[in-house]
Length: 87
Length: 87
Ligand code: FES
Ligand code: FES
Image (cartoon, rainbow over all chains, first blue to last red; front, top):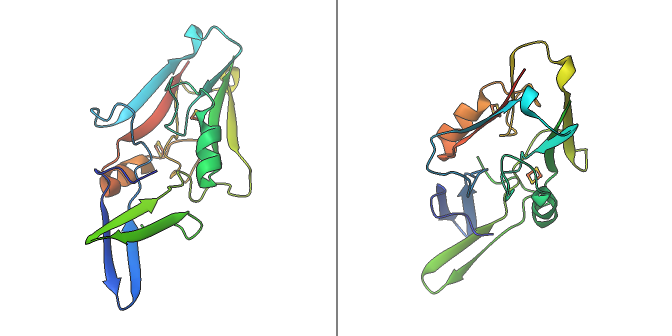
C-alpha cells in the first residue's frame, strides 16, 4: 500500500537516480491516538489453552491475532507471525 | 532507515508530483531464514510476575522486549509497544 501520509518520507534526485528514503511505521491503523500501544494479558484470565497475540499490527481483533499476518506476509515478502500464549 | 533492498518499492512521476509507493516489511532483521516467525510462551514456565514481549521486531532479545520500541517510535513517529504477560 501507499505510505501513510503521516509517515516521514523524503526523496531527492541525485543526478539521474532517484533516491527514495522512507521511515516505515509498523503500525499504520491501530489506536493511533495513543502515544504507545501496550496491552496486558493476565494469565489467570485466559480461558483457552492457547491464545494467539498479534505482532503484525494488521489484525482486525488486535491485540489478538486474526490471521491477517498471512496477507501482510504475502503482499510484502515479510515473515511475521503471532506470539502464542499457552496455559 | 533506507527501505531494505528486498522491499518491493516503486515510484513514478505523475505531472509535477512524485508518487512514491513502498510496501514495508515490519521485520527487517529477525530470523529472516524462517518462513514465519512464531513464538510460544508456556505460562507455567514464566518465572517473573510480568514479562514484556516485543511487537516492534527491533528488540535485541526478541521475542522479549528490550525497550528498542522507544528508539523506533522516536525515529519514525510510530506508536508501537510490547505485550505484557502477567502471572
Ligand atoms: S494477525 Fe497479526 S500476527 Fe496474526
Ligand atoms: S523492543 Fe519491541 S516492543 Fe519493546
